[in-house]
Structure formats: C-alpha cells, structure tokens
Image (tube, rainbow, N blue to C red; front, side, top):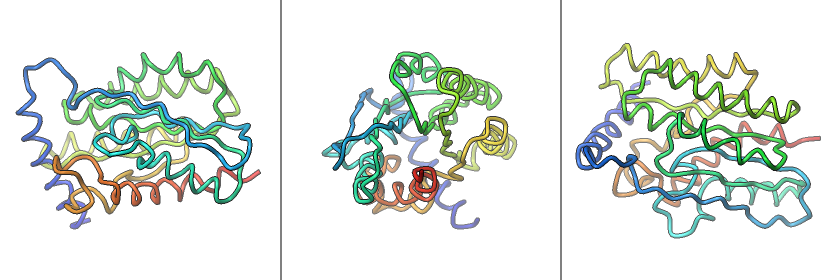
Length: 230
C-alpha cells in the first residue's frame, strides 16, 4: 500500500501540472484520437471482445496502436488459437459521460466480452463519484440490454490521495460496487505496477510506454483469460 501511495502521489504531481497547462482551453485533458483497431487473428474469429475506454485503451502517444494493451491481448489470444477478435474502441480524453453517449453506435455489432475502462478523466476533473458511477452503470446496462449473454469486465482505477481522503475513498469504491451490482469481473487496478514507475511511462508521466503497456496487458490478461474458455 505504501508503494501504491507513492506511485499515486507521483502521478498526481504530473497530472496536476498538465491539467494546469491545459486549463481554460475547453478541451479534454489530452489530444483526442479514436483508434478503433482490430488485430488480425490467426484463425477466423466469430466472437468479439470490445475494449471501451479512454487514452489508456487507445494507446495514446505510442508509435503504433498495435503496441497498446488491447492489441497485446489479441496476440495472446492468437497464440492460443482462440476464435476472438479484439476491437479497440479507446478514445483519448473520454469521460464516463462521453462514453455513455458514444456506446450506442458501437453496439450495432455483436459483443461477446465487454471491457470497460473509464473514469480516470472524471477523477482528474473532480467529477462527483456518484455521477461517474451512474454513467458507468448506464453504459453497462446498455450493453446487457442489447447482448444479455455478454461477459462483462471492469478495469478499476484510482485517484491520487492528495485529492482528499473522502474523494479518494468514494472514487475507489466506484469499481468494486459497480462490479458487484452488475455482476462484472473486476481488474482491481488497471495500472498496477505501472503508475508512478518512470521508465514505464511516457514523458507526461501519465500514459504507459510500450513496455508499460506490456505490464498493463498482463494485468488485464489475468482477468480476461478465464473468460475465453468454452
């Protein structure tokens, strides 16, 4: 816990400085890019894993979108010769409210496993945790109403303790509560062993490097792999 605290503290300092730099510009907290990418599978795929998130999912700042963790998950799937296609629907700067508006058109195609990675930008903006919870819940409800048999995965996030204990605790509680409420498989902290580690993050101190994405993929794979079995 002390190590994680230090990691969050380091991350907060960098995020705060960047937030100040961009404040007042009326934009999201990082340049917007939408990278809906599917890696080629070794065999014909008939099932879809949809990764729905922000810049962490999109692979912001990487030389190649195939270095982002969703594509690395596809590589692991291909190695096992499983019939799944990964779709990266990450959008840099996305908030839970924005995601709630964007999800509908992505559900035009069938989804077998849905991975939700949103909320970090809400925490950066100081959005009320209750609002973030409701937005995330609405996204999940839309998925399950359209595809009742879809398996659900939630990527947990943290905010730095410097935001205040009450906000920290309320934000942290969003993810286990939502996972329980909606019967989702929870990744406790998406950036475990990555957040605050200088050589695993880009110069902004926020977005994982190519090597950092490998670590993130490992965190995700622990939860995803059991869901891929027949």
